Length: 121
Image (cartoon, rainbow, N blue to C red; front, side, top):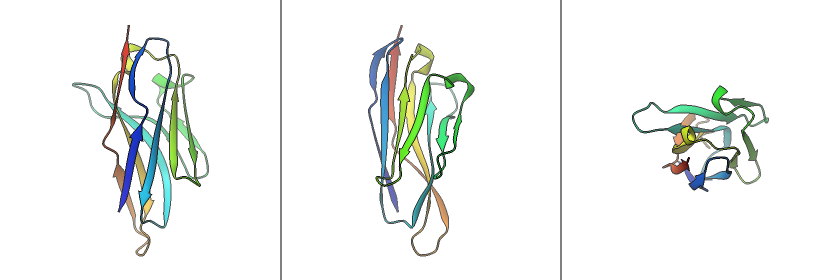
């Protein structure tokens, strides 16, 4: 079982910055890809950014050039640096990871509880 704990959300004015963190804990063989998704009211959950264990990254077009995803493999933690925030970035941000089970080596998907990001105009 893997637990994901997110932190760093809050209220910020347009043009401001926030940094989200997500730490994975529990029993697992390995943490594989990690990522951030978001869900705004009335909309589907969408991928914001993802990063593999080797450091390859993928971003939604809407955040390219403004958001940066990174990870610390030693701490099993993923970060999302969000700059030049816009009101349309307002959403609940969820951490996601795929982890390899410590005995079966099967891969499972895990989600955090989410952290609210609100950008005022």
